[in-house]
Length: 316
Length: 81
View 1 (cartoon, rainbow over the protein chains, first blue to last red):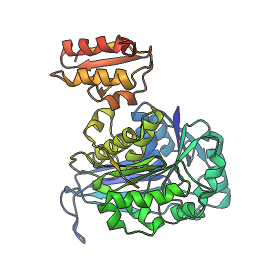
View 2 (cartoon, rainbow over the protein chains, first blue to last red):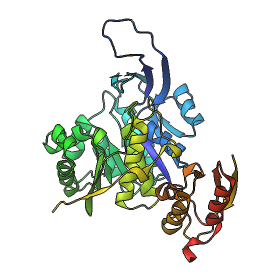
View 3 (cartoon, each protein chain N blue to C red):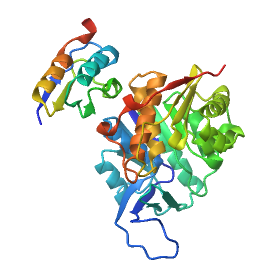
């Protein structure tokens, strides 16, 4: 039982912990700067290693480069395809009150040969995974339909979870029911963008979020796990809808919280837990990640799913 | 810290009923006990370990008698009780 992750647009994640509120135009002496191999797929693979689940990362990178070496040393097996250029750098600024500012660079432009090689590498290794996770943005030069065209090729080999935004998400929803993933993990903004609803309403009202998620389930997506920031998450399947607020958490960094939430869900699914338990573990993972600095992945002893109260939502 | 490595005795592994019984017992103890690093008082976390019958797990905690009590439950076939 393992989890295969695709990181089409890997990044070197640099996190700067500011000593106070960010001051524009000022010179700031920072307390600490960290740098680590990242990308949403990579984050999920790291969480898998931490939970004792074997994992494979598929990414465009040099097989003998420092990025891949860092991942292999962390226990993540890598299958690489020809990269289009240098790995991009993403800069995150964190303030003591938990405010996070991200400056994400686009990455090198992919040509058709790079995209074909990446897709073929993933399809060749997807059957190793009970789950394959397609997560994150697409590099420049990639058609927005990349995920939507990849999902049918993975069908029958593995279950598929998707966490993406903007045009790749819109293209996937447009292709329904043809390119339906088993799990989709939107946040409130992403769910609003593909269901024609209002982000603020979805974030404030779990019932409205569940109703919007239901529209996607009716169009063929197996499960929608919608994260509502500090309000928790909503889970909608063909069988029901559930909402869970997070346990009281002192937010340190929300970077990677969504990735941890999705991993918590997949871990619970791998272990055969039922829907409310899957949601409880997802929310426990997300809350634990938000309470840790940078993209730090929660360890099992950081997790308290028993403090998460899952409520069934009436959707009649 | 006292710890003990034991084999899971329940035929279904550390799953639904065995996990619930162990978590209930661990929750009633005065000190925290972990199984493979997760809080033994959380049945959900115990189930995430995916430990099957015969798999060895490490029971650990600050208090030796608490570790012994939980280890004794882990080795039992709790599906048969």
